[in-house]
Image (cartoon, rainbow, N blue to C red; front, side, top):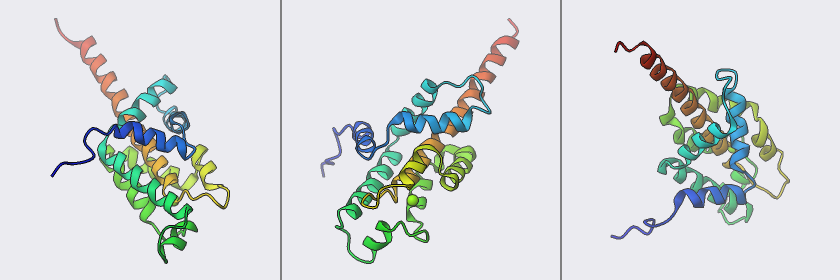
Length: 177
Ligand code: MG
């Protein structure tokens, strides 16, 4: 069977979908920068953006974003059947599938991603706060968690890559020639 997904620029589609829902990659980069600056004083926004790009290149993350945004949009258009329509539209705090989907998508990025996701989910900083205080007709039940997941995964990447670079530099400096 031919997979229709072949030939699609999934990353491009995801970036466009995020923008359509009001989230730019620079918004997410601000989260990563804020979270990682205390540990990496030389961190730049460009570095944060490049790690976000890498996270968005992962198929599992792309699929989670696509399905979450799709459900938000369906709820916004009142196309879901009950009781799911009311649960997602009202962002029921006991729903939990939004967090589960997002947490699963950043699970491969280690403990820093895991703990950062929990923090961003609870503290609702930056663009996550903006999504949370949405106009009544907008539904971002899945999107806020997905943004936290993208940022958290990028934080995990930043932390490990900075250490890799430091260790590489150390080995270079201490190599006996
Ligand atoms: Mg949510």
